[in-house]
Length: 609
Ligand code: ADP
Image (cartoon, rainbow, N blue to C red; front, top):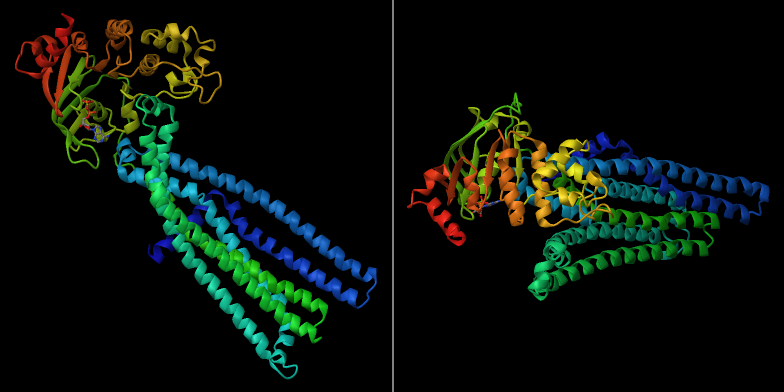
């Protein structure tokens, strides 16, 4: 990544933090305050020691004791007060990060959401978050710790300064009495600092590159190991005894490549810490040696020794903080990059005016529509021409993979056609506001989802539930016998995930609820994609019987492999290999013995004779 881009990301990160949680920036004040504490203690210890060696009275020493205690108290108080502000700001920023992501992802059209590029960006951000912490908060913590380290180093030099005159003065013959001793130690310290910073930076870059590789492997591992734990895959795993197979795939890469990467990570971390510790020890040794020698010769008093020694030794802490922060700094620009990559996602679909009358009549036309899923080569639909008018009931049939569900997804504008146009009342649906257009549809998808929410809210898709309407829809969907057993009625939570009194329901019962939710919405077009797949024959027959009643004057589309559904729909559309092969009433289509409908119908009918 170019330096200019890094700087831009950094600037944008700081501006975002300043806008959403300015209190977070107080970390930059708090960390230097905390860096001052050791120096307060060093300074007053030196003063008190000086007074003790001069045999001062307790009354003379007392003010220094009081100052020391007082300053410590003030700093602790200030730290506590600032900690409150930064703590609150941190929570605010945490909420912002999550809300902003949810806002952006929800604002995306389904096509962009599902695309490989979006999913990759989302995954990269998630991985970074899990391993390196929050993309906006971590940089502040790391930078303020770096800032604290710099302050510590500067104060250390200032505290050691009183000794400079003595250290650099020639006090006699030989190396120990010459300024060269101090000069050598300074060069030694400067070299030490250089080596720490350079090596930390190199090691950290290596650590991050290796860690990124490792995270990818861990993602594969957790996918497979979740399969062993998840109840959704639990049945297959047990019936087909797939445990060994999955364990093999889960551990194959992690046990080989993963272990190698882990060893490299461990060695890099150990090397970083060892290097910092060794350099700290050498610096400490150099400083002790220098000051000790001068003290031995009686060239400096105990107070100066304490102050200078304390000051010098803080350099080590400062350098450690700088080294560690510099290490983490390597992650914060990629973190900001991942975050803003997600935040900058924009819906691909254009959006226009709201529908004038979302409950009005509909006339939908597919005009030479072809469609390819994003990132795929083959067309799932080809040159489809079709018209659905208000009040029409249509059955869609066709073999697996013939494009039926894709047709519905385009109808609901989850995707835009690759070629051709879909018109609503003569106007391209891309000219309408997407949300307002979707008010036209109640859909029960094959892979419908219900949520761990109270039953009533699942139907109303809102906290406000019209109880009478909900009960009516429950009745029409055939769920009433199960509902009667629920002691908390519409307030009963579905599933035990979020409520210990929640109820588990069967596949067929869930399908009835999905239908009830579609009925509750009461949209002008109702679409049922394989709505009886999980229903028993009686429930299926009941649905057939009531279909015309609840579909009533609405436009209705019924996709099913049970061709008997074609008897209660005025029109039938037959799909095959992405194309609309036939269209007409059952009676019209069944007489054409050369075509698909006749084949499909007879394939099923012969088992009912
Ligand atoms: P049907 O509902 O008739 O069984 P679909 O409309 O689901 O068929 O699928 C039509 C074709 O589109 C199939 O070849 C399927 O593999 C492909 N397809 C469906 N969904 C996706 C998707 N999300 N991405 C890529 N291809 C898809």
